[in-house]
Image (cartoon, rainbow, N blue to C red):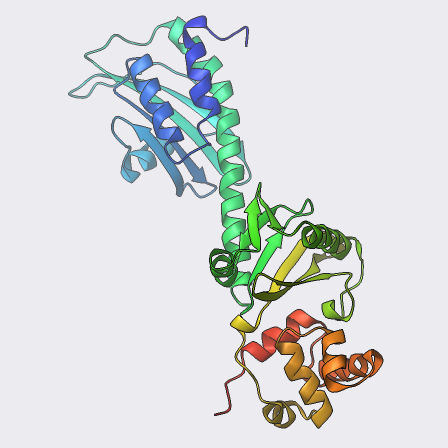
Length: 349
């Protein structure tokens, strides 16, 4: 900070906020243009093969051919601040910096003045050098956020393969992404809300159970065979005319070093997202017994194991065994897989 000229302090706030909004970088470069009396300023990122990954500018953008010419005539690795004057029709004074360089590519910034301005002074070159240190940090954050955005899109595309409302949470319980069904579900009901990047239930008791369920799902090193077989990993909401159950299960990525925790999948089972399936259809499709098909059908209607046992006048253990048989015959392992399979079945009219 001591190396930074006092006259440039006001730019720091713009640099720090560059990644806070879509207009952040544009505002920053507009201020740079005015502050240093530039004709244009360009920031661009090239991959290892010198393809343009992103470009920000104020004044006039560089064309792909200009960037290609710049790359061909300049050693990227050796690129540093310099003061040059072109011998073209219009004299131009430029200073170039490499702001960021890694295996993914290079980020460069180009300051330029036309001949209506004076050449850059040594003092200005020093100021650019010092400002570039702060710009480099902002660019690194931009790249990090860009990677996060790409990862969020990838996760959302995976979630959208689920027909049930589903959200992906990180290890702190913060929301990373929703699928389209979850976005719709959140909008058209009252019990579930989003607060500070977390999914919360309006009922305090329900919300406490939800937090407990998410925490347990990530701590447990084993796959959950059936979320609704116990209250450990699910919360049943039966209030205000709403009827749904939120289940949680661990999401883990497998690598050569074994399984690493990546977060939790939160999903909603609601009759509103599943058309009634006839037990007779389940018997034919999966070879279920009449009793198993009935249990499976009720389970898909968001009835708990206890509720099914009462309605069918059976013990909870009997219903649990029949449900486990349904998992085996449908080649699913947990509630999420079973309900998602049932939701994709064509209705037997």
